[in-house]
Amino acid sequence: MPINPWLIAVLVSVATFMEVLDTTIANVALRYISGGLAVGPAEAAWTITSYLVANSVALCASSWLAATFGRRNFFLSCVALFTVSSILCGLSWNLQSLLVFRVLQGLAGGGMTPVAQSILADAFPPAKRGQAFALYGIAVVVAPVVGPVLGGYISDNYSWHWCFLINGPVGAILFVLIYMFINEAPGAAGERREARKRAPPFDFVGFLLVATFLGALEVVLDKGQEDDWFGSSFIVLFAALSATSLLVFVPWALMKRRPVLDIRMLVSRQFGACFLVMLGVGAIVIATTQVVPEILQDDYGYTAQLAGEALSPGGLVTMVMMLIVGRLGFIQPKYLIAFGAVVIADGMYMLTSLDADSTFWFFAISRMVVGVGLPFMFIPITVASYDGIAEAKTDQASALINLARNFGGSIGVSLSQTVLARREQFHQVRLSAHVGDWNPLYYQAERAAKGYFAAQPLHGGSASRAAIGWIGELVQQQASYLSYIDVFLVLSVLSAALAPLALSLRAVDSKRSSPGAH
Image: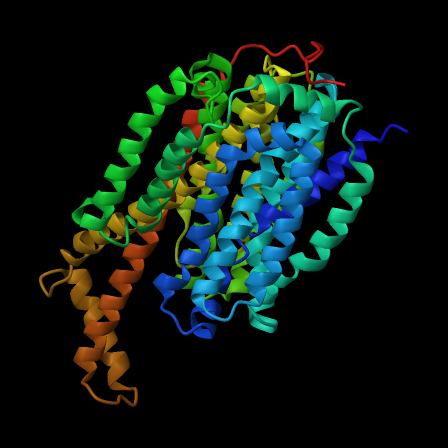
């Protein structure tokens, strides 16, 4: 009996939602993890990095593993490993055990996401893929928004352990449903055995090279700003290791008939442009998911849960727009992507008008604008990236597109944190240059502050010292606001730059059958 493809879409989307959720749910719980395991904040942050590195490394081998063992079997294995490792993360007794289990969780998640996308591509004909990817896109785009809210609520009201333990029952139910309702095509096992006899062995050398490149680059991006980038010998070492691995991998992959990652796909006009656009989308989604709650907590005094809730309206808008955009298959993807890029750029630019009096809804509305634009980019990119891709290449295409999203997110976070730190220093120096008795505005402010503090019961220090300290804090706060404005301006420009890149895509024939369509 044939299985309704929409049931398949729901199951793989829920699995993807669970996996993507774990990329952000632990972010707001880091201070709880730090206190619970008696480690510093920097050490606790490795629970995030270890997951991302393992996730990226698994993407490199997911295509071969899915082809060798079958998509269904591999997907089930990933769901099982992800569920078990999530429970183990929640039961961790020290940092070392948590890092080991997070690596296992990342490996499972990295294998799960691209295979889910390939299952969707093969379950639907080209004309229906837009609607299917809309449902899948809800999982990928909304999960990073739900993560901080859910993680903040769980950590504040229960324990950080439950950020991971909640995956246990969900994963177990999901495993049973996938086992029951997602089946292999008749004769698929025999075809795989014959294919393995003809296919070259797994590219272990290429896998090690690309894993080293991705892992070292992730360390550079994650620790670069903290360690002053290339002023640190540690960062220089990992940057050199990453660059060397890449330089060796490129000729190696070009010589192999079946490399671990087919980089020849990146030089094609269609897929290469989709890869670059997805890099940008990943950068904007992940960077804003981190930066907006950060400013709300640091400069506006929001709790972690309330800061996460400021993103929630945008997530709801995205869910609705995913369903709408999924039905716009009659419009060429390049026009939808360009429109989405412009809308997101506008949402980011709105945030450049923030000030000390900005409200919850100021940030929520800007996020809602971004939420309108994201589906116009995510769904058409996914559809366009599979255009003209042979069935044998769909797993490779999925792995590369998901790599783009992951590393786009890493690049976006690194870029935003670097701009934030450097521009805050710049603005603080520039504002401090106007502080002095020779400045009439400063003089008036200092006199008013002295009068205020002179009337207050001070403890340790004069009214003059308190006034100068207050002005110093005001300068620092204004420098922080201005640096966040610079971050949002950079992200706005980045999004706008994706529009002309999208227009370089060729026209897609949604009615054309592909080898992977049923």
